[in-house]
Length: 80
Image 1 (cartoon, one colour):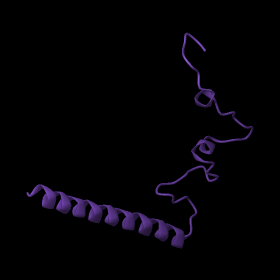
Image 2 (image 1 turned 90 degrees about the vertical axis):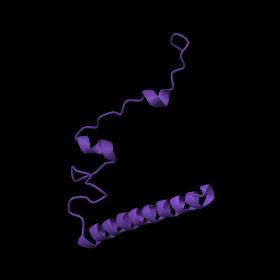
Image 3 (image 1 turned 90 degrees about the horizontal axis):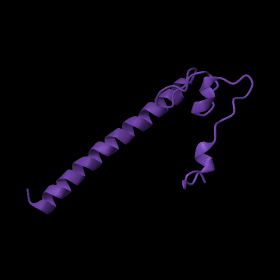
């Protein structure tokens, strides 16, 4: 303990740089040098890209529908 403060060792760990490692290792070990957006990596197959885009579109539509029903429910409860 330093000056009455408890030091948590997990938060103070510094990752050790391995020989031959690149900066992309920090984001989960992407081998291509870039992790890509929305889980789409460079060199991904077309069906994988379309599947990821479809999943994100369905999630977005689901959130919008959920918010719509929550607003309707709150309006019904509060009487507006």
